[in-house]
Amino acid sequence: MTIVRDPREAGRDRHQDRDPDQDEAFKRDLLSALPHLRAFARGLCGRPDFADDLVQETAIKAWAARDRFTPDTSMRAWTFTILRNHYLSELRRSRRQVDYDPEAVERLLTMKADQEEPLHLADMDRALQKISPERREALLLVGASGFTYEEAAQISECALGTMKSRVARARAELSALLDPEAATIDVPRG
Amino acid sequence: MEFVLNQPPGTDDRKRRPRSSSATRDGPQPGWADGLRKLYNSVLHEPLPDSFDDLLKKLDRADDDRP
Image (cartoon, rainbow over all chains, first blue to last red):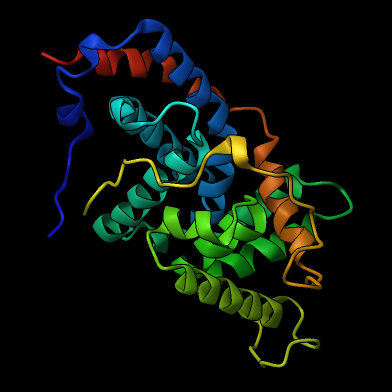
């Protein structure tokens, strides 16, 4: 049984006793996590505008639930958990994944990426969006964000073995998509 | 849908050791592994867009909205 918890409801009346310095420290940590949240969200959903919406909504949820954050622990891991749960909730609610526009992403990457690598990054992004959300998330956490398998499993709320399996499968899928000659699995390029 | 907001155990930044970019315990990395990190880092190092300017105000407003 799961419960939808409104962070504003959860935080009501409980923040009144908080030390303002503690809140400022929390806010600093939260703001410093924003670039990481943007990168994670962009990788998850492939849409810059949707990703930034997710990050802002995550920041507001995190702020409202700040009583539950343990000081001196990883703000990044904590907020990543909030973001991925919010993302999955949004996917179920509105099926926004069908809005993914690979051509728009490619144009953006071509404009912003290093001159010598725009196509490579666009290919990478396209391939990333073709694998399942669970595997994409696993690969982003372990292969890009630098979390350990254990930390990634905690963020994704799955068993360690499940996380390892997701990463391995994601790697095999991406290899097949991006380097089909070297991969043992023949997956046609879409 | 549950928003799990409790701190995941064992995710203390103080205990985090820097990890090398490509040589991991998993052995050789495929050629695209660096591309994945570059894609991630390309967003990580972007300046925050203007839409984030109001975020601090939104956080304060979230407190003010409480009855």
